[in-house]
Image 1 (spheres, rainbow, N blue to C red):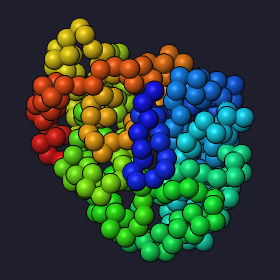
Image 2 (image 1 turned 180 degrees about the vertical axis):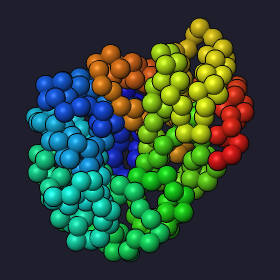
Image 3 (image 1 turned 90 degrees about the vertical axis):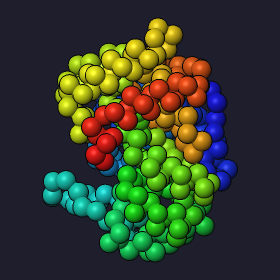
Image 4 (image 1 turned 120 degrees about the horizontal axis):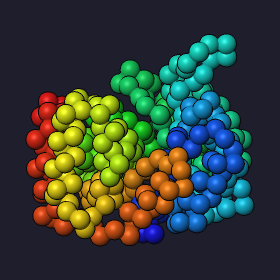
Length: 302
């Protein structure tokens, strides 16, 4: 599988990664999915301390035991669970980040994290303090590089300007093209990579996504989603798989280093990985996809 450089770092990641949030909590199944992903050439794994209250990191850690050198491992920090309380609180403080990383390392059964990401962020955060925490973790060798997971352009701008982030993780797909307006041009100009989550829009952009489209998505109504799906399928004809088209669309922007679709079955995993061997979209195909998606109500009113 093709590997792309993450920003200006020394990390090279598989262009199709694995978003581990959908692995579930059953150990045998989750471990099998991750190990099969590695066998298929998917070497970029993304998890978070928040997922399943840390259980997701534990399962990923078990799955990569003995194969750590094959993996570019990413996790996230910033959402703090308070014992005895439901839910979590936002805590981007230096003290919490430097404490939480030790818990993640223990759950992941590793002594370093390749990419440590702030799991959100606001302009009210102590941003300089947050950046200082990540920089110190780099100096200490506990993390190799850091980034931010955010959909907020104003927050992303601050970290681009003030920090040494190598990547931004953000939702990006044919149905959610918001990053194209400001974020992607900004990142491309600064040599920072986008990691695209949600490239198949919860499965709506796959061949079997009609039922999921009926539940709506973002500002789309089920009727609008059905129409966009139909037009995309007609434009693709019989030569392209819809899910692969969606993944190739997200990968078509030069600032995108990888997509991280989730997978809850071996079949989904294999299908996603096969997108790496699909032909890149032509300029004409990209133009037609943009024409179709631009007509959507969400695109017009975002």
